[in-house]
Image 1 (cartoon, helix red, strand yellow):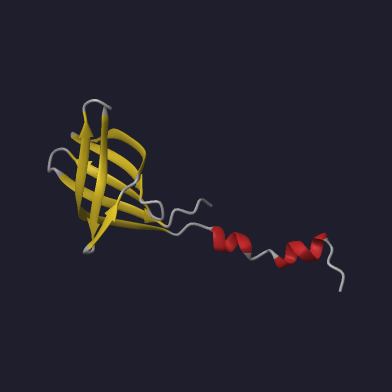
Image 2: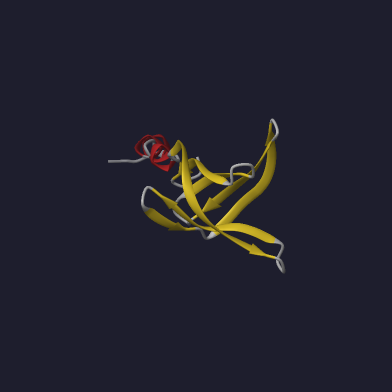
Length: 107
């Protein structure tokens, strides 16, 4: 049987479906352990507890603050290496919310 470029591409057509990220909106309050380093000018969540499981955070994607009305929120994108999380910290209530979780695969 001879395989040409068209046949190979049709055989591999299922690969992109496997590579798509699964992202789920959560919007649940969670517990977070936060690290602050004056020397490195770094504020980073280092552990997250969600649904009774602890997730050790190994990478900070971004941190920025936004205003929603008079509320000041700090938004964090963090990763465990296998899962990505989007967190929000409300400076008025001092509560953490897990906004979104993803399996980390970039689509």
